[in-house]
Length: 244
Length: 244
DNA sequence: CGACGATTTGAAATCAGTCAAGAGCAGTGG
DNA sequence: CCACTGCTCTTGACTGATTTCAAATCGTCG
Image (tube, each protein chain N blue to C red):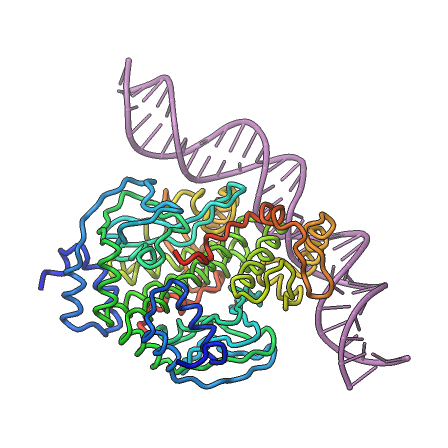
């Protein structure tokens, strides 16, 4: 087997395999998926609404986000994606994209032909289930974001997002601390939280003045995780990180 | 083959087969799924957050909804479900429920053991893909609701929900008109739209005064669909009704 | 009729939005 | 090295959509 650490699909494999249901053959089948590496610059569109994507993408490095634009011009961001996220497997099944995927930072993507995704799901039930599982976790995150935007006030919403990001970064295993780069402008944060950038700014300052976080530039340090999680009504069960 | 119209899973089969990818054998396999019929009264919980469901449910008759409750007591409804909807196939894969499913009206459910769902997905790739597809449409609806709640004002939000409901009912084939029973209290509508029931009330009255809808009791008649859809920024692409 | 839940209406309060201007910070180029 | 440019962040004053609180009306069902 190839060295997972060097393979473009290594992060995906780690993700798919975390429930422990993949055999060595399954794992090899994932690594053998046809793929080519592509690079996008920050702010490039990876998928546009109404596209018929030919590839499903796995994020190899960098950050990306999914969003949709309302008729009144408002943009809603649905999710932020990290290394290892299969950001549009759904397009292998749905055919027509109903929302946009955009690069938040410069990114590297492993592009897998949609037919290959469908084929591996059909021929390899373990992998198929694991892929399905990933899209269901996406779903769970969407639901939590809907709850966040619909039923929490600005402070709680913001705190919730900061906690989610911290935990997902930790789950990647690269960063054990509660300090991280949040590669988003306050405008983008606003579109994720359904707030204006002005109010995001005021809210971040409040959190900082309350001693919950420290900031400098885009770097965030959660100085009181327990209180921030409490304030943000953050219960990570929806992330399904514990391979249930 | 059994008469689909009389089989509890007939509506599910119709749903799964709409893309035309199921062979006769696939269809029979779906109808052969082990299931038992269960009835719930309006407001009964079908699945509770943190449950480990033993069954996945298909809605045979009535209406159900999915929701989650925030720490501050606010409830956010994520989706309303109609006959034929597989309201918690996701629980066959995820194991632990991260949100509630509740009966909106009296309902009949076909309860399929979660193991049987996983088995048919593994042994029958066409059916597996069709099930996956259904959960992806759920996802698409969640995203649109997030956009609705996050980026549209009260009038547009409400109009959007009314249009979605009309179209999904039409897709069921039972009702070709734009008049239907909306089996929700204004309180429940508020939880779906992230508004208070008071504001839902005012907004419905506005829509009525503007000549877009007529109401009596819970019955809604869309008198000007074109304008309502325009106002609600409603583009049904996200429902993926056209078997793309 | 009486009771209960749901809907409707009114008035006051508030959270977040809008508009607008200034400050900070990188990168660019002279 | 510094001025310039562009973008993001910060701040203030004002506005407004929606919430809150509270009371009245309606409809249905026993």
